Length: 384
Image 1 (cartoon, one colour):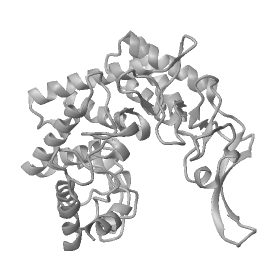
Image 2 (tube, one colour):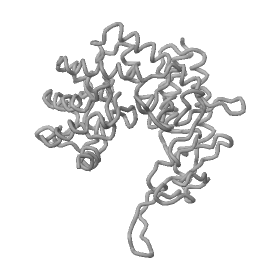
Image 3 (cartoon, one colour):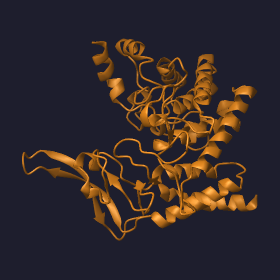
Image 4 (cartoon, helix red, strand yellow):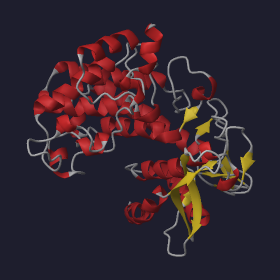
């Protein structure tokens, strides 16, 4: 009976924290308050974070609401210092919710997947900067210790820790898991204001972990026919080679996550020759693999058999469409690839079953932001 309630609670059915911004100065008054806006963190659907007039931006929300969210994060933190994923931690909790959390706690494993753990650390660090409540500082420090303990000696992180199983044992770039961790460690290492509380010994360990992570990223960049390309969603935790994940996620070159990796490498303060080469090679790959003249439309299809409607994704020719990229590119050929739950590789989105076709992001546009970032990075590196 407990298991049924544990699996079906509304908190578990909703997405957890998706922290997009926590560096001061990137979002006006919200960041002046030292914390991300609710829109940056959760979208715009949290009425309890609204002002009296119903507006959410640009005014920072009250300190007591910052504390309410941070208090929730304390409840969800596991004993190992990490947090589980896919739980909505930013809503008011009833007594029944708190009972469910106490019952479920530690049965949902800690992870860095889906923005878990690193986003909670970032939020608690900012909340401590505002409130100076020691419990927020201690929880953030425990989270940092978790990240440091979970790191492999080769510099990568598994998707879950401890005791990862299956593909979750591998170094995980998927959904920007490792990039999220590295962003936090870089902020700690560079003594960004929200991490002023971190003691020198812990800061130095974070700096060393960050350096190992950068080295791992450089070493996992896929080389094909002697040319560096980009990265896979997962890399073997021992050999560093690209590996499969779920049945429809084949070992392949991945565009969206690789774009975030490149942006991370561009933020290295004093990049060495290896980092510079990695960025240059990836930028070349993105230029060679962009897809022009098409767009992706979401459509509603009605079944001729029973009249039921369902969502679908279709590729539409459009000469005016901005460039996009396939999510996956075949290692041997650089061809866009698609895969259903049967694990069979296809070369057209239309060839896989509608459930996977409509239920997964097979094309991405995020690499577009690399152009401006690369120009700024190139100018900075040239000056150094």
